[in-house]
Amino acid sequence: MSDPAARRAVEAVWRIEASRLIAGLAAFTRDLGLAEELAQDALVAALERWPSTGIPDNPGAWLTTTARNRAVDLARRRGNHDRKLAELGRDLDEHAPEHDPDDDLLGLVFTACHPVLSPDARVALTLRVVGGLTTEEIASAFLVPEPTVAQRIVRAKKALAKAGARFETPPDEQRAERLGSVLGVLYLIFNEGYSATGGEHLVRPDLCVTALRLGRVLVSLVPREPEAHGLLALMELQASRIRARTTPDGAPVRLLDQDRSRWDRLLITRGLAGLERAERLGGGPYTAQAAIAACHARAATAEDTDWVRVVGLYELLALRVPSPVIALNHAVACGMAFGPEVGLELVDELLGEKALADYHLLPSARGDLLARLGRTGEARAEFERAAALTRNGRERAQLLARAQECGSGARPRTAAEDRG
Image (cartoon, rainbow, N blue to C red; front, side):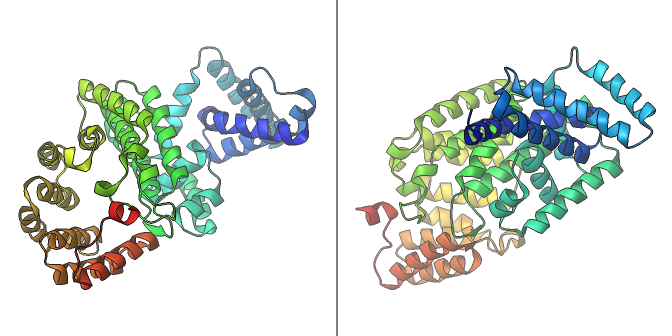
């Protein structure tokens, strides 16, 4: 095998096996930093040997054995080797025969989303040790300096060590709370890919793909958890629209204006099946959001959307997790179901909400409703205000274009009309 071919093969194996390898090593060393070092050593060994020996039949087992042998060597050199060797040997003996690697992986997922960590640290650590992204890739995805991400990861590991975190699935009484944190982190990752908060690109598909992959792993680990299915269904239904969310030059295309023939039917099928499982198990807020996404997925055109059902689903969602953002989405849905006057009245009730004071989608939604009512002067001011609030360059350009159209006295054109 040529060196480049071997390197590609090793990289492919690494992407598949890295998180399980680190999870297994963390479970018996109880040190996440050491687990990563051992896994990296095994990767280097594979890069050195596999070009000449070929890819082993079970590359994951090869990496695990290599890393564990390295752990024994390391303990021997670091002193106290008798005690360390005894501990590792005991752990290896207890670990190897009947141990399920999925248990380690699930434990690592929960540990990366430990309550002692901040949300930013949870995201960074999850992407690093579970998603397998490099520090540079995480920094690039979230538009923060690489040293900042590196510091977050280092501090997160120290915080876990200080808290005495165990790399295992929490007991039942803590599991629901911790699962909520895990789901929240996965949805944060997905949302940053689906609708970037900053930069010059509206969509970052790689982040969506990573979140979907982690979501599928999580569902396989906790198949009886309805909200795990609900979140995965939501992400798959939303991801089905990614190709239609932007024009070829990257400009945003609103949901109502998207070419639905470009929606990914396989993802829709998977999302609808996941939604059915979540509802059968008794899903919660993520499942309700997936049901709203399903209303759009089932409609052949924007006009065919069952907006009355969407309104009802938002009302149910607001009862479970009341928030100003959900209230805004409910108002927009009412504007579609019952006319822009109704929607505008509900949006205006939210103008005093502190949580929405800097939220660009509030003036954007208000501008849209005003434009539909022919109040173009007011609509222009709202679109300009929304443009000033967003940190995403593509969204800003679209909002300024809509403001300019309102200023010309013409009804703002839709993206579909722009495409001809």
